[in-house]
Length: 486
Image (cartoon, rainbow, N blue to C red; front, side, top):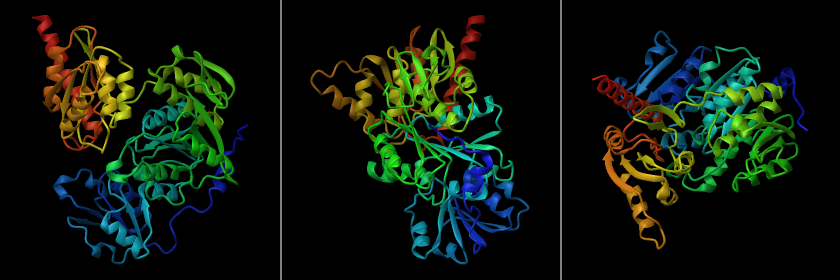
């Protein structure tokens, strides 16, 4: 039984937020989206801010938001130890590794180092619902926010989903629910961060180029639960072999959060689960699979996770069900780009790791022209190569990871009984990949962008990569329409 916390009780339970009284001058590392938001939030409260980035000024976007703020000093280029002089706190953007020399030096000298998420938490009095995991966290975050909005509760959806948490600290009152997607990069340096509900969707190999081992990656992800206690809720995937032990440990913690389990395989101990064609939510039969707006079994998990968190926060089941029926989905996540000559084009640029690409491929089990590649994240592409047998007709390789992916396909081809691999095409970049796929695909087939890699070799982020794909498809559609008129 989940005890619903009244809003005022929740806020008093959070303890002291704010910044330590001795903090006067803050070094913000990284002048991207979260760094700019942090600098704004701090300077608006009278703190002196040193904003540092290794890029040149003409390489940075958005600096104009700091115009007229004399409290903010901009230091670009080399980030030497002199940046720490006179500083009381370091706030780092998620793109900056925790083991960066300057960050290590700050810790060695006793300076506190916070992530931007930690800073946002300290500056807000609002209830926070956190969502993390390897895959599904963006969809789950957006869906949970949609549930609050459907129920008529004021809500803001922020974090790794696209809007820095500190962006909203001067923009909302304390009654607004804040749903925040948190990545492992953002969880590296949290200390007091304590969400009222926290979801761990799943855990698969990802970001090992930064974290090194799965053990380290898991340890960082579970920091989302570190400060939770009585009155909080942890929402745990009972089907995930790495995640389930985390839930059992939390259930044994005293005082600890209420643990809510979800299961797409129908585990009877899970309060939210799939039984046959029906969702069971907190023991009550709910919607049929066909009623859900989202496609794919991985999205069933996302629906169960978001619904569990929403119900734990006191939303009515009717509002949750309505949101599950009409949720429009997330940009760059199995997003339809268009249909040309009865060939469907699908943008899943958010599939930045192998597991996410596998889930995208599972939604289209045959006749797929798959675009793979980008910047490698120390991934194992063998499972993806195996999954492409039978499902994919052609695979188009782009970006730096192309040779690594090709090698994985060749390894699978060399295994006895491996099956017939799809044709591999070295496309190089997105323009050529889509053009070649459009020429090869026949009616009824799918051109799917699910890269299984980061985007940073050719794009600033996965959003830019997805938008480029959408733009190319739109041009193809327009050209096709002109030819049809001719």
